[in-house]
Image 1 (cartoon, helix red, strand yellow):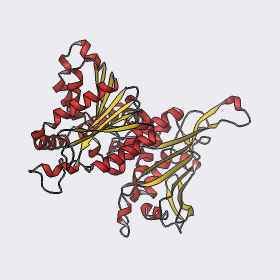
Image 2 (tube, one colour):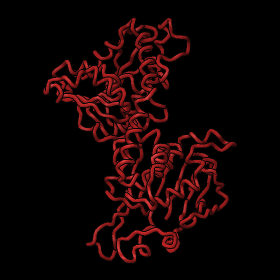
Image 3 (cartoon, helix red, strand yellow):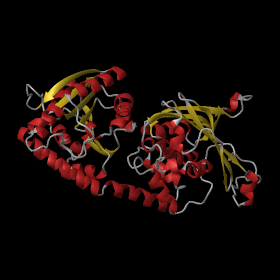
Image 4 (cartoon, one colour):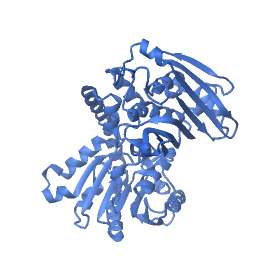
Length: 465
């Protein structure tokens, strides 16, 4: 079985430093079930490919007690030597273990976290669920997916396609992320593992999925299949994922939100933002709205008060925030008619999620500044590309206005979780590029007092398809 990882980031041979494998050498590692070879079919400044070739010893597997049992010769006649399965994940952990852990090369430590254009290819990948499942697994993580079904026999086209795919995934991400995603998702696609699954597998799953699995739309399916449908382990893993999401970070975020609200209280920005967004939604004629990154539900409260909005969804990566929103909106005591209007669910704005589709409008109110700059492309692809509502409204702080907050130290941002705060020109450049790439027109509106010198405290972009 074969896995290739290709980059065109200049100089492309930096891939060798990231994987801790010299492109000039061939590395072979003996495993319990065969041999793994790492080599580089191409290694130039413009393009570099690392190949992991895994040679399975099927006779050795039988001698070691691997029993498939489907039919009399199943142990000797099967697909395991030829397809990307849990054997490949073990090889990834053994051969690329340092890169999988994200540990840097001491001579080039900056490369471990560097996002690079990556194309990973598995010529034969088994998938119970076909191309549709592959897309549901990888597209929410920001990948462009190419999945070509492999026919059972070219001489007999009437037999149709097999359950195997020629799989290609592309994204600009750290190599570590690609390895972690493959490590978890290959056995999920195959819906099988070659070894007994016990509680230790929960730790592997949570370790490899710590920064993405909790908010993945297919979290439950991934967890269930990765743990080979062992219900007690699946329940424990899902419970731990939810506990981690509801831990101290929510308390820290609430404290930071309170500090930001206090800072902006002088100009009543929280109410003005919700009012400005509501007015823009009404102007656009929207009757169904998804509030992405809804937090504790400030905007949701305003939308529920207006009967124009017939269908409202609040989405957040934090289960703790969704719980707070539910309590503040008094969802448990709503009338049945009101309850039918609103839905709360967990997701992340950097993942493509089909549940975000079908709304007239999407709102990201004071959200984008909490996203790492290198994940903005994933946000763009998920919201403006995959979901593509008719209207998208984005509000974000105007960093130029910060000088008007006397209690804010020079050079500080308004919230300690902000990754950045844009000037008016920077926001216009980002929004204009997004609009051009996804077929929107965009206009800009001020929120709060529009200072003649530094502009408004909050800037708002309204995208119209």
